[in-house]
Amino acid sequence: MNSGARAQKEDGHMHEMGITSGILASAVEAAQAEGATHINSVTVSIGDLTEIVEDALQFAWEALTPDTMAEGGVLIVVHVPPKSRCVQCGEEFEHDKWNMLCPKCDSFLVEPITGHELRIDSLDVD
Ligand SMILES: [Zn+2]
Image (cartoon, rainbow, N blue to C red; front, side, top):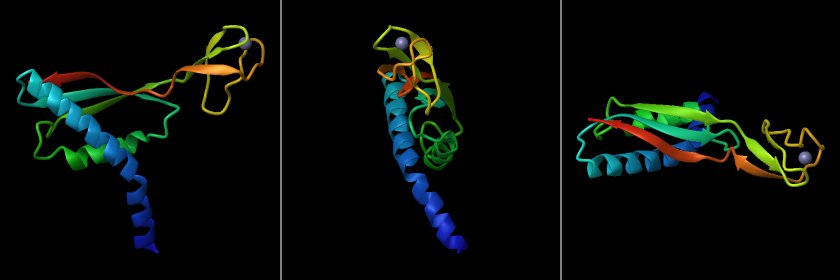
């Protein structure tokens, strides 16, 4: 029973493992392009509408960075709150994952502005 639960948890990390692997590869490429030898930190923006779990990203970072330029470096995650624009009245508003109604006119015809981010904001390298 315990091993089953553990396997499930590892499966749950697979998505973030791939994302972190991509972040790390991009960071290493950018650092190398600058002639750097070590990555001290990588700052990423993650929209709150994504299903990405920060703990899982950190877990993957710890697992993937040894023996890379980012060994001992830090992954800094900036959460971006979801924001949308109402198609009916043009109101821009922040909201949570579940409630996207326009606060001004109650329309549900809204288009997302932020919340789906997944990008590297900055690198700190030596
Ligand atoms: Zn509206």
